Image 1 (tube, rainbow, N blue to C red):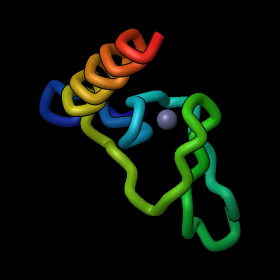
Image 2: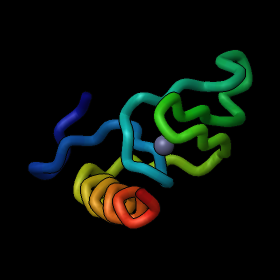
Image 3: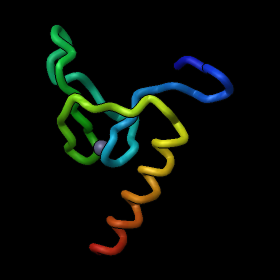
Length: 66
Ligand SMILES: [Zn+2]
């Protein structure tokens, strides 16, 4: 983790805001695979504030479905 300008910078899933993500192919770092929601893609979030918002929205949607 790096702290820049008072914000923690990590890798977050753009769909659910999880930090539980890994490269699909580490050699090429072409795509990310989220272990929580199954997201696979090249887009990744590095801003913890944005990730918090995404996670809240994702959990709201999940609760509605249930
Ligand atoms: Zn996810």
